[in-house]
Image 1: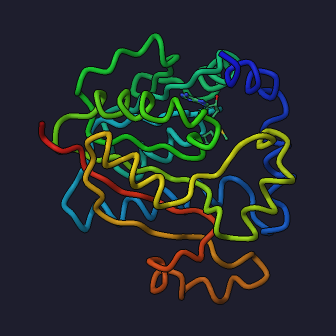
Image 2: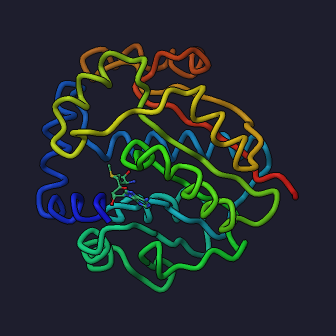
Length: 232
Ligand SMILES: C[S@@+](CC[C@H](N)C(=O)[O-])C[C@H]1O[C@@H](n2cnc3c(N)ncnc32)[C@H](O)[C@@H]1O
């Protein structure tokens, strides 16, 4: 698979390439990962969801798994990815009794999960394969459970600038939010909410307290579409 081979070649310097691309924001990758998971935890508390089993779809180096486990006091997480090299690093650094990593071929979706989290993956998937990837996620979730899709916001000029600086984003096309919503609905998900986060770079961090009040406007560098798997 072409994407797997591309990411395999980045496994050794993915973190450095990401840090270099994100540097105009003044923050590192962990700031954004923690922000996404904290926001998701707040959203799920509001709707009374307490996931016990979680998937990180397109888990990369696996560094979000400990954040998900901690935020939800979950029983287990599973990370899936197409890149064998990324999975090797993820297993080495983060595998445990409660955290396991599989290729998308090894893991067989069987409606056992309460939450699927996915960040920054779909803009690396060819558009004609979006439906197939969403179907995999749909089949992984229990009926009625939730999917948190995080993508880069193509309407934010800072995001577009960062993507042009990012070695592994060459050829990636950020998904416009209406397109992502359309794909999710077609796959059988009900959209619960759309949130746009990460407006202010570090030098304006004193303004960040305002972000929660304007998160429904398409300003932030990334957006979350939180959705629920409809009962068939
Ligand atoms: C930019 S990285 C993001 C990694 C991780 N989600 C994070 O937030 O750090 C994109 C990841 O998506 C994976 N990926 C690309 N196409 C995929 C697919 N069809 N299914 C699952 N993972 C995929 C890549 O191998 C890579 O690890």
